[in-house]
Length: 124
Image (cartoon, rainbow, N blue to C red):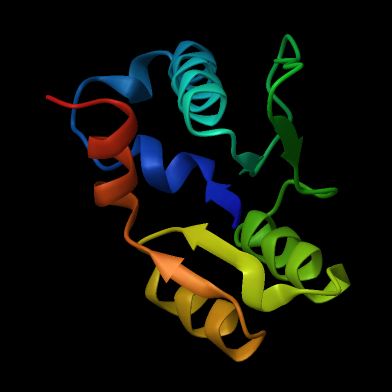
């Protein structure tokens, strides 16, 4: 199973002050996803709306962003990635965005609630 993570959607599942330092929240999410991917031997891509500044790099997971920073552009990038994959049925997208979830299912991938992924990678 390949995972695609709607980055800011997962970050936004907890009102922990992430909005005061988005870069730090993005880096923390990548760190948690790396540990999870290593532990479970998973292929994970996290998609952000805008490129993190400074860039966040990983040798464990793929960190990417939408080509144009506009509302909904991360959603478009996630759907593009699914449609470009020869096995969309092997992709699980972590998001709680209803519109994106519908598009993901229409592209033959599955959806996992963002809150459940956050709890899995970062238990309270």
